[in-house]
Image (cartoon, rainbow, N blue to C red; front, side, top):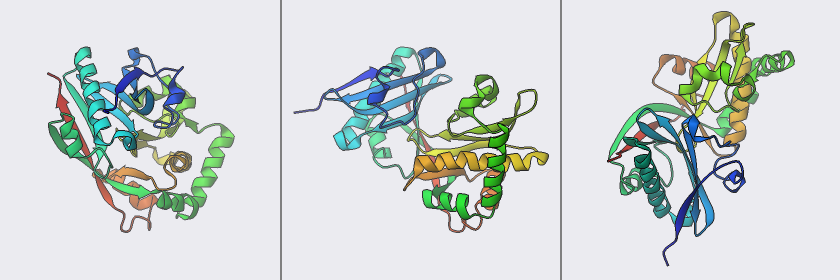
Length: 279
């Protein structure tokens, strides 16, 4: 007998049923431009989809699926439902970004789900949990990062985006920072100073989206790196991956400076964009 799929809006009352697929997720109302759908198979939770408005497109910001429940079928049926929602809301395109090594949601499966256009958007370094842990414990700057992190904490100067609040983080909104993983310091006037921004791909992969620091604030930045990447490590341990853009010179400099000599032989991966017109 074919499985029966259904979809419900996720809110504060039922989020606990779907935490397996997106830890620490807080549902928002539709006015925020973000939507969350719980995916049910025979009335039992089997996934969670989070979508965000991106101009006239609807971006699938995260797709957590229990593929063991239905394999390609649950992927195709879920994306079809999201396409109907996009059409109902008047969007012109459904977009999904994913890493090239993602299991389950391959290009073949996405084509079955109606996606027509595919392109590589970026190349990224891939850093596994063991490399990241080595950086934080034994890397060239490990002691300095730990020392400066402790200083920022004692001064109350290093803040996660959750602690910093909307006014301080508004500048970074278009990067879709993960609030628990992104950190900043602020000027005496309350404006962002040094920062490190961690964002999330549609498939749940974490990546370094941006960073800023001024010449006389390098010690603060070193401390923020430790605070942020420690939280990233908690999320990807024991066998997950973390990504850093490989195409911009400043990101390559970041890797070569803070990850050396761990960067030797470090793999690279593609970030792909799949799109499906809403007709």
